[in-house]
Image 1 (cartoon, rainbow, N blue to C red):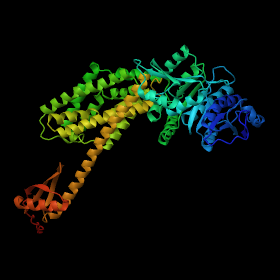
Image 2 (cartoon, one colour):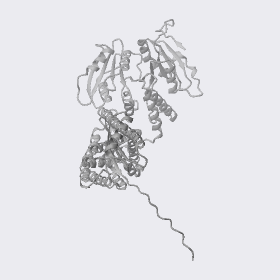
Image 3 (tube, rainbow, N blue to C red):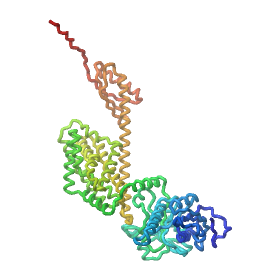
Image 4 (cartoon, rainbow, N blue to C red):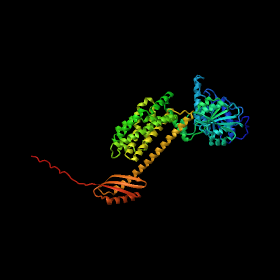
Length: 626
């Protein structure tokens, strides 16, 4: 049904702009939200669609309420009323999608107070609040979450609180549409350390959207935007508070996945929070994450404090940490030199490195810079202490070649990356669940932090710099991926930075950014090495096919070594032969390989002379009988 109010003649042509949809479940709620939607729709040249989904019990006929009772007396835009049988977020979402809405306006429901109303009423209020929150955080179009009533009065002053320094275009448009003809917008520019002049980017954006003389920027020093907004509202009177939801993207949503309820519940002025639709990939990730999060039993505040205290204590660099670092590195180095897997496993169990890595993941999630420094300091000091021990043992123990256990840790692969991710996830999960602490030794073995570190030191002491770099790459890959996986698991358990503190949120973003960059760099290096290894392996197979086809019958190929550096292909072929002569046949083989590979080749032919002989024992004659 389309309703023309006293301010909108019935014969006025319909608006052509995308409509504004209002979702309401009660008559008074519909009137409050329409009083806000009317001026906005009028400014945008759009109509208003009221999606009315009553909360009436099943035995009450919701149709007894006339459409005109849902609309304020003075409405400045045409309103179309669509009715739905049940109050649900899907009704409002469907209305927004059906009408291709440019804006969806819904109301925030205050959480029920203990003892207020009946248990059924409190449960219904909680469900309504949760529905509004879900719809607002995952909207089909731009969405406003409204708290409080304007009472039909004109808005003359708006306090604008951006989420990340620069307000979004949609938020500035909301400020422009909501303020009255003489209204002004005050943009709050919050800094955590020292107050500075507004940046040119902020000023230019406000000029473009609001007009040069229709706004004011006020700088404030505070640890949180919410606190700064409350202080500003205490000093000056405003008609409306306009705030933004967290920034778009997966990481900002993980840091603050809920509506900023604190600022809504603590202010006395009408409040509008603006959110915009997310990218499809982000929406898909949110829904997937929500399903997993609901499956996991979250930790309460006491359990989170226990995990934080345990990890912070275990990440400190003290005498025990340094002693275990020295012992575990020595055991790992000796196990590598002895090619003993059992000794290497023992070193993994003794090593104290796992706790700082898991602690680093928690520090990033909490956005705690001091905690980050404690964990990073432990990792760096442990690494710097382990290298001299490994180098010393590598020099003191005579070795002709690097053993198989050392070489196995000099060529990291994608499988090593997956193992590190799973180890970090398992470690964080075990730390969060105290009853799973028995799994930590197994996690330490799977993580294998000390062996690649010792292998790198041994190779460095043996002047095998390529092998040393490969083992060091494996160690760095383990460190970064374990910390990143631990951070994700802690987010899964409900750990979050203190969203009200600017410093914590910045540390959260920076910590995740550094981890992501390091993982990307390490992954790129592993991919490059893997491609190189595959290329060399394919080249070796091609060379082996050519050599085996060239060998005389009875001769055999013993070994091939291919070095393809800077475009120069060098091949070392070792053959067991009784007929070949090195001087003549090396040139012939090089020419054959160059023709087959279509590139210049240098061949180092090693012929192992083989002398073959045949002999047989005489067949014993059967014994003669008497």
